[in-house]
Length: 111
Image (cartoon, rainbow, N blue to C red; front, side, top):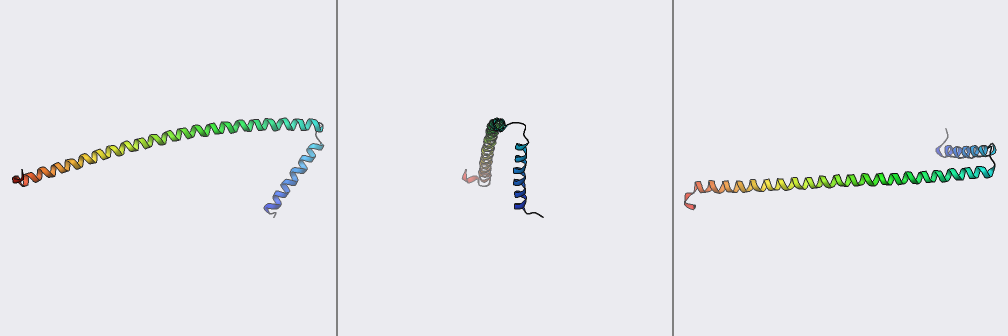
């Protein structure tokens, strides 16, 4: 069984052999082939650049959406905590008042 290094070497050798056979059997001249490959390279580079730009735009949009949702969630959490704090303070105040009233009922001399 071949190791990973040998597999890679076979792959590279196969690539060179395939390229050599392709160039030898190509129906176009070397200059035409170079021009064709150059054009394909430029087209591929342009297409790759466009895809990269679209990817950056998509990532930026998703980032803005996530940021907005996180901000909304944080704001909702703060509002909920504030309401809970107000309810807790109201409950404590009501408890204090009830305690004071009950204390006065038990000890009328303090009134």
